[in-house]
View (cartoon, each protein chain N blue to C red):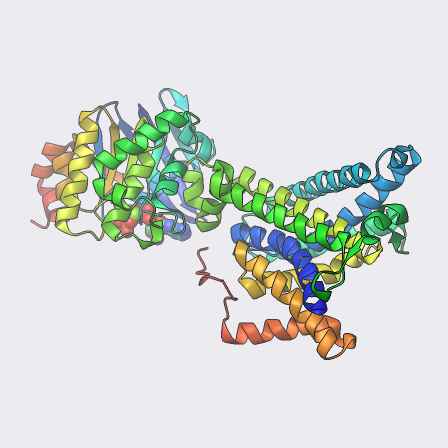
Length: 302
Length: 234
Ligand SMILES: Nc1ncnc2c1ncn2[C@@H]1O[C@H](COP(=O)(O)OP(=O)(O)OP(=O)(O)O)[C@@H](O)[C@H]1O
Ligand SMILES: [Mg+2]
């Protein structure tokens, strides 16, 4: 039970990051390798914002408020990063072969890592202790499972964002335009949809979700570092493929499944191979269902 | 209303349109007929801004539109029901119609227009919550036209609305096109089914490998030997 719960928390985070991969893939048929870096930048931004707020004396006023502000700052600035990355590194290559933006994405990922390393150093940065303490110090024990407030916040926050995203893509015109664009980009433009704008919105939303994940994980794991985006990104990408890349519910299912499998693997087998379980599951699922769990047959429409 | 002047357009090095000029006036149905690969669809995609103009000009209501992006051209009042229908497969019928009205913000009027196109094609009302990809070919064609109408276009472009449909369905769709025109719609119709198109249209153009080779009233084209031999199987 305990490891199931831990897996759920971890999986929720994977799901949030995976959504960004899957949304971008759904529209551009490309993998945004820089997405993991945006997640890592989100973590840094919260740390920096909190230090700043503390220095200015706001921490004494209200700790929860400071946390919310730092989350908002991380989400907004990461959204700006996502927007800029797309405009600078992908949009100019839109007409080229699909491999070209992919290579640009790898370059962008390296660039972002190095830029954070130069700005923040190679050593991990701690999430300010007093803010973390507020959440992790409160624990509950329902049904014999040890749970702290932070874990509940992660689950609740993820759920809230999933609901908002769902409402966005099913109820708003922009959300529907996003789905339309992912189904037939040329037709979307013939219907009067500004496809460039839809793509930007996709990057903005995906990046904001990744930022939220970054902030929450940074609290969970106590610190962050410039290279943290790599593995998290890889796992979330795995989750997206697992669920069927391009499919939003698939990313959520894939993320949760991955988190749970990992945590069961640690519990039942050995923690040494933590990072391997994800990929074993991926291979097994793809052998049986090449399109992923909820994937449609992705007919190549280009 | 719409004037193409010496339009050239190419796919890479292959020139698909080699200097075509044509005109569509307000209130008309004009048809463009031609064999497979003549460049009919390319003409429509070039008008809509999806294919870039290499040389020549396109103007609409006196304004140059040949360098505008597709979504802006829709705002100017041109919408298209493209070849192959291109229904958004995983959006419902209603959502497909809403996407047709994407450029508009008048929610109330959009609701009325949805009712209007349901009046035109009642089957769509029954299928309103069904996913576009699960409709039959004829239903998809109706939806494609209805979606194009949702933009309240001043000029409606139709690319082979009869393609792959049973004669009864084709007749129904052509009847609807005629009705739209009677209510004042201006229509530019691309067809391989030359006979039906020429019977419906006021004027027609014949396109052969990227060039306009004939241009006359529809009645005159129907009676022309050349058209009869090449396109009417006479
Ligand atoms: N995406 C493309 N890339 C390269 N060449 C193309 C492309 N689309 C069309 N062509 C070429 O341009 C020419 C005109 O094609 P177009 O689709 O406009 O013909 P059409 O008159 O609509 O034919 P059909 O009646 O078969 O629909 C053809 O020779 C075709 O092979
Ligand atoms: Mg064609």
